[in-house]
Every structure is written in C-alpha cells, then in structure tokens.
Image (spheres, rainbow, N blue to C red):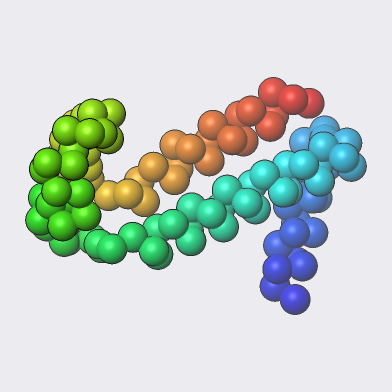
Length: 106
C-alpha cells in the first residue's frame, strides 16, 4: 500500500508541474528506477561508512589491475580515496540532474 501511495503522490506532483499523463508515467518510471537502482547498488557495496577505503580498494582492485583500467584508477585516486568520500553523497547531485532533465521536457 505504501508504494501505491508513493506512486500516486509522485504522479500528482508531476501532473501539477505540467506533465502529461504519459510524461508523468515516464517521470515516475525514471525516478523510481534511479532511486531503486542507487539504493540497491549502495547496499551491495563491500564497504560502509568509516571503512578504510584504501584497504577496500586494494582488496577489490589490486594495484596491478588498476594499470589495466586507467580511468577507474583515476576516479579511485581522485575521488574515492579522498578523505570524507561517501558514495551516498552522489545521490542528491544525480537525482537533481534527473529531475532537471524531466522538467526541461515539459
């Protein structure tokens, strides 16, 4: 029941913002899929808040493998290994992009 209420409220917000019924359906699907996918990925990560990211990276992708994946190595060293990095922080930025894109479509 809670999911149905949430979907109904989302459709209501979309319609109030000017989306057509079809547009609201697309928006609901996109936002729902993004949120679900992000949460699923986040809970599946082999690390959590406070874990030593350097140690985790070494376990997941040994240094000799990083040479084969230069872009992943760059992202890891420039972002993931920075003090204070939290994967979940990317959610707000990304969902804002999704919503901005949806609003630009109406």
